[in-house]
Image (cartoon, rainbow over all chains, first blue to last red; front, top):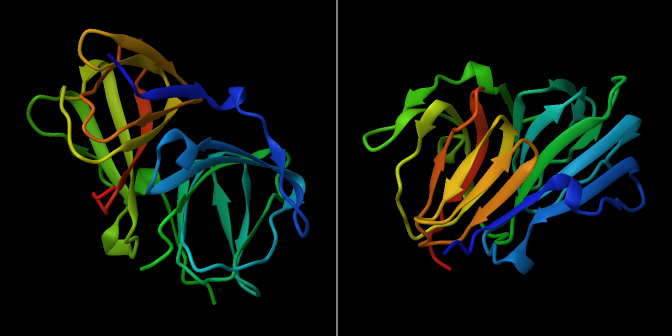
Length: 117
Length: 117
């Protein structure tokens, strides 16, 4: 018997990401409610000209770019990101992702539930 | 200044997965060596007719299917997987993934470093 969970990202309702973001929707694909106690998987879509907030927090991001292109900034500096790129953003580092392309930027973003190092 | 790490999956050397697997290559995209202390991100390619070993271990998998299609089995039962699907395989559950399609099956597979529940 299989107790694993399988679902398609399109079966999960996208939710608007709150203030200080623009044109960003998030789907929580795998989370604690499913039994994932160590880390969560979220599917994020950023519209052209959209952006996540410039923010920091005491946990890391592990990101994989599924489609599109954009810029990730840590304040003044910025780096291009595109399909097939992965990003490791360490805890407490200020970051923001913007879509400067013409297609929706689609990302997988994993975060730990255990925030301690 | 940005200290985050950005790389493309194609810049990471694929390595053959050991015995009991067939036609499977893995690239470790994000790991402890990069500072990721909570969980790792691996990019896995399974050739048509290839398969991962039927195995179990005391940690979970979080998987996202990037391209292709295949079957995931827990022994007798099996379920179809395809692009855009995500899988949560709980700790200690026997599992195997096979590519029964005509394209390379490409997966992202995340595993925790902390193996305890």
